[in-house]
Image (cartoon, rainbow, N blue to C red; front, side, top):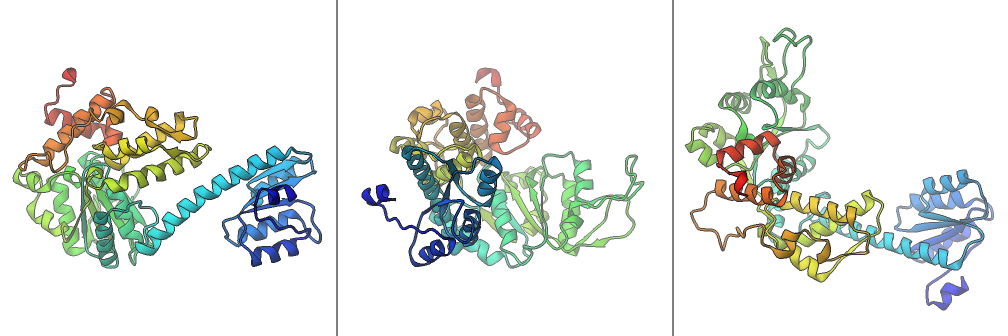
Length: 437
């Protein structure tokens, strides 16, 4: 204890659990170092009490007990780490340093989470830009209603996160949230997934099966990539929106369902209407409220907070120490155009964390296209022609990622947030010649 006092640290000591708890009430401490043998009670009891208080305190156990079971019990009770006696002072210093590192990590996450909860009550969305703040304010207004919501935006911007924010801030938060990707299933399977079927409706229908509408009763059904819906399915969904009734495949009676619908798409639905691929009446029926999520390149102030959030997430996942970003790396990340949006950023940070063994993330850890900024074409509003169509931006995004991931369709589809069959269909639609890339 004297050693740490000489270093200028604020240190207090006690030989009992009661004395330690009295100290913790009077002053603020970051770290508790405890033996397992204490007066009146055990160190395990102290650990449990401290952890149950929800204070941001890390606990290091020092013990002469050689039983591994005791050590495991201490860790399970909430201890950050344990040291077996005798130990070197340098070992204790290292654990204290790691504990402070973990505290810094948790305080950063806690601070950001509290800020988001206090301001938006959305503890899983990381954003600081004014445009996203405006969207959050709209969500706070529409969430308590049962209005249908259409979320638009490029692949990877986080449309499902917004859908979840709507659900969990609504009066239906205790009900189920059922997401379904409309492009992932052929039309016949999608119909049975949505509406369910009755026994004997078709060859494999050996029993009744509820569809997503019934499973989401009292909650929210999130339909993603609705631009891929067939006209037939659009009609059935339109009927539900007008009557709140569904008819299972092979059924003879309609079923009343209390389910809210939230839709999302990265498709230009107005163009789809002009091409007779999307019903105009269905479009206006689902567009009671439209939330457009701008791409990451149009809200660059969100890039570093997101990158830092993903770094923390993956450091925890892979058991690595907290890393910091060099100023040059931050600049490169913020200047890149992120055609794959938040999903692309998340995948890249995960890759960096996995292969990085140093304490910092520098330019050397970034993919070549981010370092040079050349692989992704600049498609910001200031450089785009005024008459550019959304499909041209989508085509550019597909080409850029085909180049980046060496034509690996599975990886490209994952980055763009679409299924592999959808990607192949779009490559054909846009007449992209992969041999020339």
